[in-house]
Image (spheres, rainbow, N blue to C red):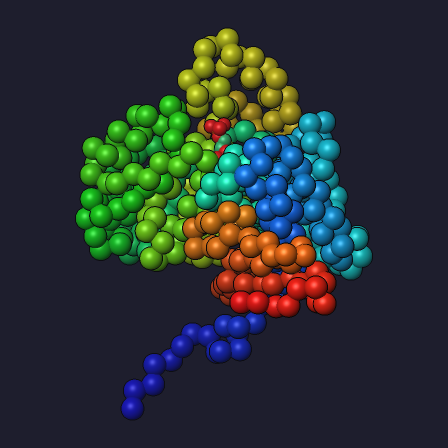
Length: 365
Ligand code: VTB
């Protein structure tokens, strides 16, 4: 009999990576679930800001029940523009000795939720203090790939994906890493005029494109999930979304390369508009250590999420990539589907049913 040694014992494999995963991961699931249920009540009502508002309020109430000293690093905006979950806001009871950095997107894809279309989710990540990128709420250009590409790069140090390389170069590497042809790859990218050139390049390279009207965060996570049908995510989207993608992709062993970009620049606005945005935003960016000189630096997975004890949770509001939507039953009961994960490599798909009044509604499957 041949015994193949496994590098980890079963107990090591199942145990959590650190105190944040041990103590806060089960609670994190509840936080995204609460936001998703709140948003689901507003699904399809055509009011994206209200749907977002209830998700934010619900997420914040749940976060403030947790015993931790939490700081929002990726949030709803700057203090003066967001009343809740603004960047720098302290959350949690302040009890205990867990000091955590938090990234939130209480309703990723507000338009999708308001229209009742697929792809909206409540998302969060946490890590130890200074474990999550502290940066402005602008755009990040990015490329996201799964763990097969990371392994391929380890074996072929001269062949690496590169944010500045032609699209074809990157797709060739992904194709080789996945043992398929470029024309068997699917690239997700936001359907925006700013991506016209890139979309042409992807098609010319031979890959297939899936355009999304909104929500490029979960497709990024899906690149690390075999069978998801998504192999690469490219293009400029929200910087917060990129950081949240980085948290999940780090846990799953994939890779993201990103670069901050001002929306006026990405969207090809006039010089005047660009200068206006520079004038308006640079003072604040400089306080975060970001200057016009280093704005264009490439940020890799570890720069975006340097933390070790990283946790992530996403609960679908409307049907999503590998997640079922929130079901609301009579009497306020809800059934929610979540994917959560911790640095140990524990990934859970949870299907939770919350009964509001056990005499009113029986459990049904
Ligand atoms: C991006 C994308 C998000 O909103 O932030 C997009 O990353 C906003 O882009 O997933 P525009 O300014 O071009 O509209 C989402 O699609 C949804 O939050």
